[in-house]
Image (tube, rainbow, N blue to C red):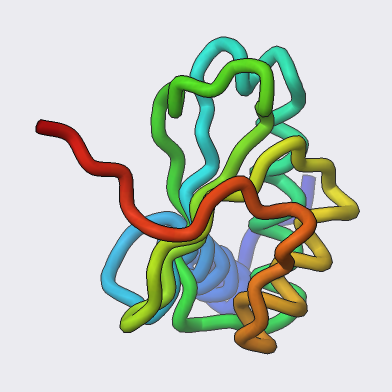
Length: 127
């Protein structure tokens, strides 16, 4: 294995920082992938990888990708919630990597909710 140069180390640090920003911090958009046991068994890991890849490929620096536990709708997993500042959150269901590409392009980058993939628009309320 060749020795690493200072430039190699700087590039590695920049790549790690960029990936960390995608998962944590303050931004205009937050995408939450629901990663409960049912979500993971339904393919949420592949959905998470696809979201991270598409956000990076689209150079969406104002977007955070994060995870949560079960959203309570096991039969509709894998699921994601998209929150854009100033807009109601949108819960997307029955996701695949292909559907994620469409959501990132149309909703997050383009501003149009992908209605046929959305289960609900708005926040959940509890009493």
